[in-house]
Length: 339
Image (cartoon, rainbow, N blue to C red):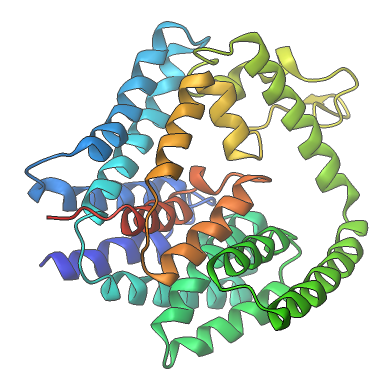
């Protein structure tokens, strides 16, 4: 039953959506919450589990110092579900059902994006769709067999139909992991030099076509840094970035005014910066403990998390249910609970 759970429940988060919720978040977060039920059989928690479970608890306590106490609740529920999925994933011996679910979900999302593009595969935004495709690609690649067809179609989709540029960050993350995880040789050095030069040329060409995307991200990052500097210890609290954005936005903020409409972004477009802005030094310490706890694990998990972490520098993969689900399961596989 547990094996079926790791297939059916994640697949719901990956592939299902309800048109009345164009970004897919309601249905997908509900599926992530159901996946968290796989942690019900966990009997004994270790220190890593305790750290993971403490994150949503601390987020809930931030209601006492955040600007909008009621705005804390959605984020707390999301963090609670993800932390329980992480706890359950640390105890999984066979991830094949999860890899199959990710591959099937990847196919469903790409087919939906092609034949019904208005919903962007159930994500409502091409950047969100790209983040999921990036996260799921390593799982399909290491599943092997016919799953390679999904990998090939995914790259065709990213290059020909999707206008997002987030795959550049993921490729950089994958290259970094490959560089750090394989023995150093002269042939490897030459290959890496060619890859870096090619990557920089392609990135320069692609980014030159979308300077606005980079510009508004810089403004969002500046606001996040300003929030951290204002509340370095505790941060602005769960959800505080969105609530307090206009107070900390730089003057002549390019993303605030569109005609007569005031716009406040829902995220910092950088998960690590948002953790610092909302949770302060304590949040940074959590990230440090998590990274320190990473150990040897399956290659699919390392490539998945390196791509997601790279994207987290410039966007918000851990705030999207399907992408975050892959991320925490990969982290669970890399922080394996040993009997």
